[in-house]
Length: 318
Image (cartoon, rainbow, N blue to C red; front, top):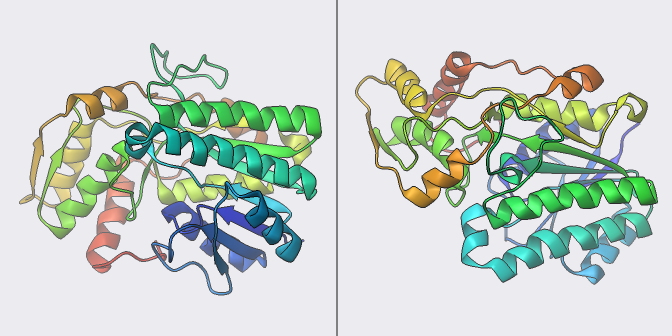
């Protein structure tokens, strides 16, 4: 049965891509963001609204008008911006999430999906990282992701909200946000194709968990659509790839032998990336909702570089 989705952070990369997966299933989609327009075109028929997730009035107006029964909460201030403006990061990431949870309870929302992040971890980690590994994130962005995981679990256990959360590895995508420390992996491919050179700000040995956007979108859909009775937990890991930055450079060189790739690590960025998980234990996602990544480093590089060469500008039809 089709649902009405409210997707916050609706102007962003993943939000717009997700609409192209949801719309063909007949769902009504409302995108909410504070910026003037999305970074890429959402699916036809989606409604785009400008508004602030930290405003109770805005949220109540939207729920009263459109009556969404599924929330996908992407809205957040990213890693580098969160460090630059901690007060704003707390307001957007934490207060915004809290108000959205409260609105979900007030308006009897059926399901609440939240994409967490590798940034929710930090410190000394074992590999693979289990779902219930202690979380000591090294950046404020990660602190808020970790806290919202716990907040959503509280709303599920105490108030019956069907909260579902996916810990998202670094995403390889044509619309990676340049303000995110994690964007290095995507930008290496993008700049190699479009300008013929790229400088890595991470170490050659850096190898946090990565995922191709096509795999991630399928994983999100699988978790969104999984019957609740099959789910044994609220927060899931997914694992796809863990290549070193040097291996990423190598596979780019295989496709583009004349490209210039250099390493000039910046300590703050490199240390942050190196604090994130390398491999996730995703046994429970495999068991509960049949998660499997399709792309390895070589097949991802083939597909991504071919797309970038075919599309001189960004496109939602990845």
